[in-house]
Image 1 (tube, one colour):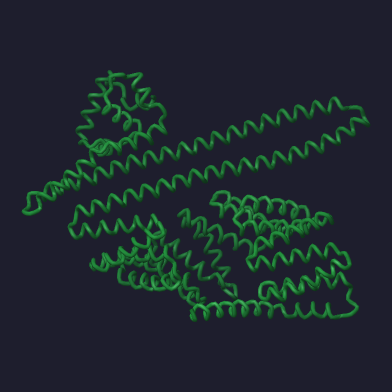
Image 2 (cartoon, one colour):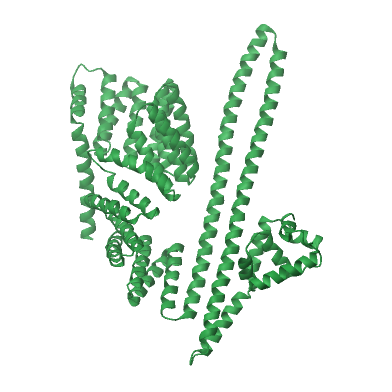
Length: 625
């Protein structure tokens, strides 16, 4: 209890110290503002601005003092009925509450500032408040509302020729899309923000967006593209005197080189990153880099070094109580011990990983643990256990793939919904424009008596616009359906290949077991194992799952076959489905649990039954169905 209290006190003191350091850097400005306030002849409106500016200066480090100055500005503004002063005070209070992570209260303040600026017709003030509201919505995970606020702010900043604020709104829209999981839209807006920053030669903005782009590309495993951006960011950060982000940049460059399998280069950057992170004192970030270094050493085959770094990372993850990373690190340590031939220690760590993974329902952690347990059981010649662990591993892998596929479909849905909303916004703006135009035409009609012509033009315009919008919506829906079908085709192929691979592995295990069953004292156990494998190979549930995926991609295929060729058997129908997918003879043999020679004979019998001539290809006939 005492240690926790000590650490909390230390953290508070650190924040205050850091904030006071920032204020010290602006001390000259603070002194100047205090002189303005103390001077007796200072006009009230000037005092209000000085109070608000002082509140802004103290906001990050001393919220209490900051609020005291801002409330003085608000009180004086109310006395002299200065609405500009009130708007400024509400805006500054919103910033203070934002720093304190009191987002709901901050939102109320920024909305009050927006209302006052609207009443005054102060455009830049409206844009600033809208931008701040967007930032708050991002913090509250209300990304659609955030994007709408940023767009409205951007339009006003563009009208008022505030290029840097306009670029920031585009960047923040990219941030919103990235947090929504909509990577492509995020990249589009980040690239647009870079173009805007380049127009005004704003290097800080350019390199900040470069880093955000690289983070998305690393997740997409586009390591070379990410590296191109990161090397530019690195040169800028190395020239920076403070170097706050240098450790993270070096770490990400190391990860890119790992992805490109250039492990020696990766190690150089990761070790540099670790030095900088140790200087910062952030235990969680230190542990993350240590773990990545361990993984890099493992890929290099330096298992002792890999083990050492993973153990150091584990100590730090235990200290900060990060369960998900503990699962990953225990699994990595177990893999190192397997390579170092210390199976008991490997068993201990993988058991811990599995236990923690179950407690937080970490599917990836459970999958990796079962794979490691299968390897250990295989090395100990416990084939039945190895098979059971492998089956669990395959089930977990399938579950993860299913979740990932669902996520991809959800992302497609987000794309569709986002585009739909954008079209609605454009439509609403066009409708507003048309209504304004109609009002002007009505006035002109009263003056110049030309209403008939104008009405005809408007009607035809509306009809054309409606047809145009309908065509666009139909095209978008078709594109979305086409993408979903492509995903289902990939999912079907993956399922078929996985089924083929599983049967091949089981068949190999069966042959090994048949070869070993003649040995003394093992025949009964291997006969039982062979029976288990035979049951799994003959299990029709696998084919039923496959058939379900197949029917989703190739609608009514079975019905069409039966209609054209009513005499085909169920086994021949299975063969025709696999021919439709254009699989190899070996893959078809593994799925059907027969030999490749058996596949050839089955194809020959099918040709005869379908009366296919020697000049025709049976595959072409089936592909046309």
